[in-house]
Image 1 (cartoon, helix red, strand yellow):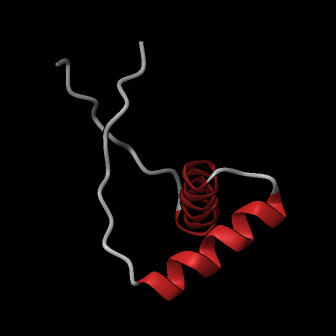
Image 2: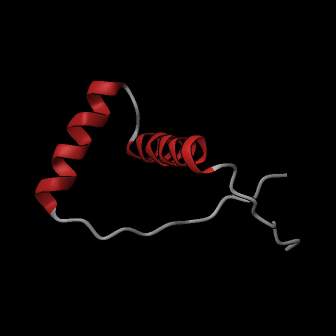
Length: 59
């Protein structure tokens, strides 16, 4: 079973409003858009630098 974590983010109001506009344009929720961008960032990194090995905690 995947463990999901909560991630807090401080962001100024103008940037958040613009971000929500982009989310709506792309048909994603803010959470979905953030996950998309994080996955894209990790994939691009791994494509150039190699796979990131992460040990998962058993908690």
